[in-house]
Amino acid sequence: MKFLAAIILLLTSTIVFSQEADKKFRLGLNIAPNLSWLTEDRIETQPGKMSLGFNYGVTTDFLISNNLWFATGLNVNQFGGGIADDPNSDALNINLLTVDSTNIYAIDSRKYTFSSLTIPLTFKAKTKEIGYITYFGQFGVDLSYVYKARATKNLVKSGTEINELNEPNSEMDIIEDRNPILLDMNIGIGGEYNLAGNTSLLVGINYKSGILRVLNKESSILKTSNESQILADGDAATSSATWNSASLGTLTQQFKSNSIVLTVGILF
Image (cartoon, rainbow, N blue to C red; front, side, top):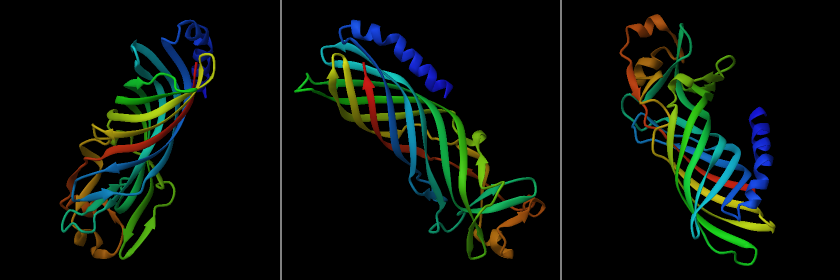
């Protein structure tokens, strides 16, 4: 809420400047629901379900020349996606999650949720106003800092059964496993409907594809092992003493984030 209040204060203090700049500078607010998912090319894991997220923040456009604008700003983003054990892998196909000092769980699937501060670094090619609408194409990159990472809906294997972990392990802080800096390709299209004077309604749709992986290359939380070792006693949880002597591999993570974002906002 403090961040949103600061955005509103910044917006109101610059509206006059924006209106006097002869449309060489535009500033506004936006909200943007998104559908996001993770992609991965490792054999041990595979992408899971999509995740619904929500973004909001400040939009700024700077006129470069003719109809080319530099579009940036500051957004608070929420995104994520699921991962699942790959049942078609012959070996190293079980992800192990060390929950505490005494238990290790065989993970079937889980959902990741990330929160970030994002600065778009994009260009907009705009048409002249047609009727009341200015159309644009957008391309560039997003630079993000991930400040929060959680794992939820942790489904674990117990013999032939799959169950969800209960509290306090139903939602886990995995901040040490996230990649703090992300870079995403950003392309999109949209339009600006002139409401009055310099005030316009902004609507756009963007596709974003991760250039940098969203998780660290080597997981500090997830390990790999052969399925027969884990399920020999039919239990999902096993004492750490048992697994200290077992051969656990390091899970190499290559997950990247992708999303489709619908943006609605007001430009002044």
